[in-house]
Length: 136
Image (cartoon, rainbow, N blue to C red; front, side, top):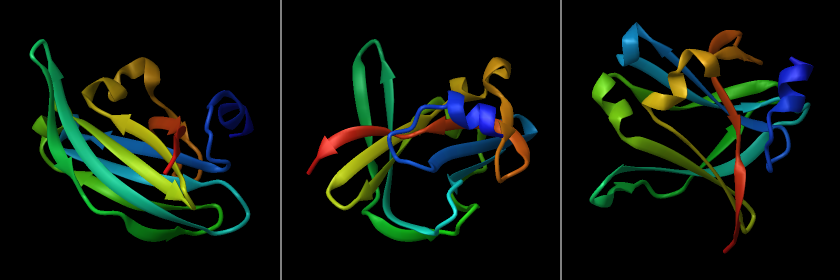
């Protein structure tokens, strides 16, 4: 676990995104994972967009919702039960204080070369850190 954590960049210390895909995209669960020894309270917003040669189409987003991720634990933030949902890019914005962090997934996230053993979840899937997007 330590090697994967060290190789995975995140601007939000101890917090990562994990996504597990089963049944060829018909069952995708997305989690915020906390590897630290303390519970973490964050606000989360979820949105999606589609991009092609004509530009980006914003498909909307949710309001922020506060969640607490247990120490050395996880919180499921999304469930996709239609493989077509992976045609779009879904982004997850976390807010801690006045700072926002973002990560996203789509069908490309589940290429075989990106699959790893996800810490805490003990499942194989996509694992990534969150990037800082600035101050409000």
